[in-house]
Figure (cartoon, rainbow, N blue to C red):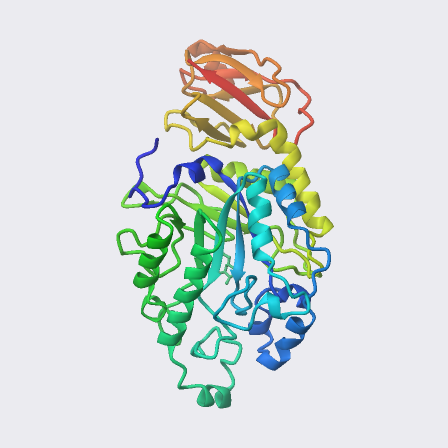
Length: 431
Ligand code: GLC
């Protein structure tokens, strides 16, 4: 096991091995269908936004179908927005009327979701927004939809963030006591400084303590503005970027998970067209694991309660690849330093089975040299069909002939035709 910067307090081994989860952003913004920040972007008042609440009726909602789609894509856990920045709650909270049970739909959607995903064997994570653009005690700040409305600001300047922080704790207590074991919590997010909010506003340390008290094994993300507090976070969350290497603090690796969207929005966005291809997504998953991280891939369900075909197509495409290649993902991590990835390749490594996986992003012509492996390979095969791959070690003279290959390099002999899978993987059994 890797030596981490700091041993997390929560139960992290399952998560470190799972590597792949589903994020779900679902709320009233699904009806607007133009980004989950629509209330902020269009500076909508509560009254203007109310139409989405009044028309929330996801008649096709079937959480078992969601859970199946996640499982078939190869995901091992899910994280659901119990409340996003808009303030709308997916469960029957005692502390607000702004909740799903008061919409025309009239039913809790969170409990059946948790049950359905658990039944499919996935772990449960809750996302909870620290921001709340509906709560009457949430002071208007630079992200608030009413930020440019001086009258509104003036009229609401008595808002008391301490009362809001208490509301947060009350809700978190509900979420962490009424739904059984919660494996992970994703607080989102802090923006300290001018006209912003941070740990003093959320009373983050108290919230952290409460969270660990109620669910001692829970994993907590890093957005409570407690980066410098020991135990203030368990894992880092680089978002919508591809990191160049395993994130570190003081030179030591930290647990990390990158959250990513299929397109440019977390909530359902009808007209957004920048959808990533299955290949890009599979490569993203591999790249993440090759740097020791997890991928949390987001779906924004529609207001009918379904995953749309663009999302389903990608989930199925990833699932098709995972069906044959999950062995190079689950339980895998960054390869030991002595192995260097060949050109256009990513390595992952399973320390338990001592197998090294070479993911080939661009299929080369016949030969794939890989350094540092002379005398180390017991057997090699393509993962998709377990067909043998021959390999040989060249003499120094022979290697020089290839240009720049160093002693200790092994050459894998590949078929000329690329195997018919999104990203071919060569499985190396090490001695
Ligand atoms: C950002 C956005 C938010 C999204 C989150 C996911 O913080 O505010 O809309 O839920 O990223 O990590």
